[in-house]
Amino acid sequence: MIYEQLVRYISKSLIEGDTLEAKKAVEIMKKNFAPGSELYKEFRLFNAMVKTTVPTQSVASRIVEEARKGAVSHNSEKLDREKSILIKEINKGLRISNLFDIRVPEYTQYATVQTLMNDWRSKTSAPPERVAIYESKVIDMLLQEKKNPTLQKTADVSKLTVDIMTEKLNRKWGDKLTTEQMSLLKNFMAIESSDRSSKITSGLTEIKRSCQTALEEFKRINRNEILSEKLEPAKKVVVELSVTDHTEENITRFLTVSKLVEELRGNDNVK
Image 1 (spheres, rainbow, N blue to C red):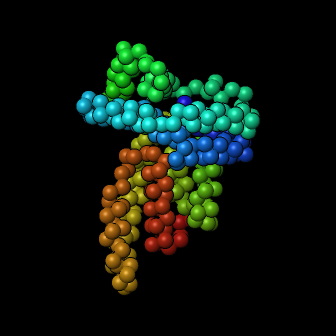
Image 2: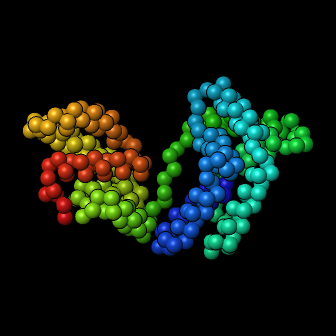
Image 3: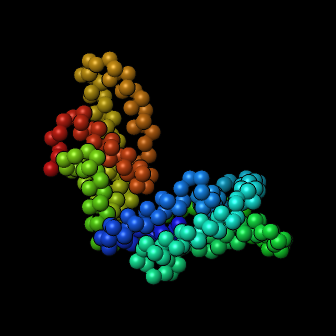
């Protein structure tokens, strides 16, 4: 729960232009949820039970059983100490008065999982009927189809996020973004509208088509044997790209593909 609240606090700080506060929160997360820590182990169990979707009840039951074994194996005393340190660092290092006031949509699911894991790890026997009820609730959660979370965007959020992504891309590639890249970014960060999704899909489709064409054109003129060997794997990667996946990770892939097209054809589309 605290992890999700920190993520939302970081987003809020970025939206307000307070990058220093966001950076502080990121550092707290990286330090306290480092791989190997008890907090990280519990965090992974939470994700497995809250964010995973499985096709059958038998699979869900197996996940719950494995999660139970994982929870029992945790060092409870160390976990409690790590949680205490995390809260102290948040209270001391961040300006937020009460992190727990930040609303998390999946609050009920997280509370269910936390109660269940506490019961699993309890040194005194937890009420078996409660454990059974909560395990049943988690199984139902695992069977429910999850929707990809989307950021609620406003015009100000859109501008700030585009600026941040533009800065990141410029640091990586230098110079300016192409018209195609800027168009894709603006559509991705636009205020929610009825045609936003179709515009993104259309933009990704065009980038994919352009890259396939550019690779074919390059294949015809290329005389470098080493590059020739790399063309087919590259073409396969491009073919497998999804134009209906509108996550930030996939958008970044397409921006990279767009940069590849620019390099294959020359740099005449930069503004």
